[in-house]
Image 1 (tube, rainbow, N blue to C red):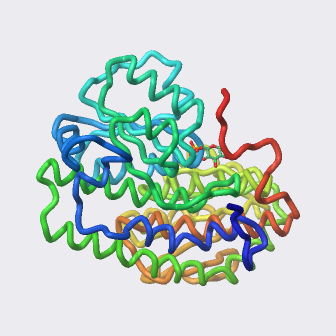
Image 2: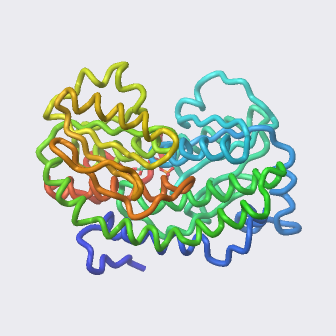
Image 3: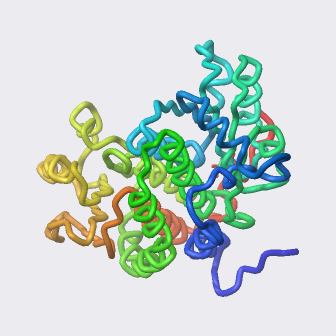
Length: 375
Ligand code: G6P
């Protein structure tokens, strides 16, 4: 039936606020990291047997996706290499399908798609299969989609129907699924102790509450959006796990507010984008308190020295305070490896409120489609 808007102005806003529920549903009934999670729908045979066999056989991962789903894949690369120790490549589906690549039959091909019907992603999957890559897994939000039907294994996210063209809750649900995949691959390689598994699961179970606390930052984001609505350009910076989150923040802003936005890994600032920094260029910085914080702080100094105005999402325990040209929103907690799921939320809200302030058609931005089923 029709999905009701309820108290929200747009589906996108509703979907942003549904994220605690989407993640809670994703984790519902989760007892531990078991291969059954990746059976997909109607897998024959012993639950989890196919997934376990595949996980034992593969030596690397190749992620193929488009748009926002591609950015969840880019985030997962950091987890898959950092936690599971498995070499991972991520490629835009429309590139992979047409280039000459070196197939590896021991690679697990992972497609990520909200709709499960994106033409380029399906074609990339079929291309990989035609090159002899038989082990395929999809992270997909639609159980009845072509993607789920055509992949050997599937993890169906439980974000629920997503209507806003700009993807939000499907993205965080994909990240949750990709994190579970990382833990499953780590386990199959003997790299996940029981203690680590327990700690990761505990952190995941805390996500709905943590997301709720981040959503409560909305009034502060609205005040940032009043500045952004007057700009025509914006730069997003992040490092490590949060570089793909900066990319996703920039994509959200350009898709719905039509402000030109670019994302850079903060260390690349001096190799080009610094030339663009003036007082009319807002610079959004995702600054979790991780090993790279000190380096990020010096990148921020470089921006300030050129009169750039910084908008920083800082973790609870970072010592960065607001001052002239430096706007800080402090995140409620420090989330470690799961931090990308939380840090993306204020960026979604920033794009949303900036678009509202500019009066664009938020749920149906010009020239874009929810699902691109033709090339
Ligand atoms: C379109 C949508 C995006 C989405 C992308 C990939 O461009 O506007 O929000 O991220 O397609 O879609 P998929 O369904 O494959 O995730």
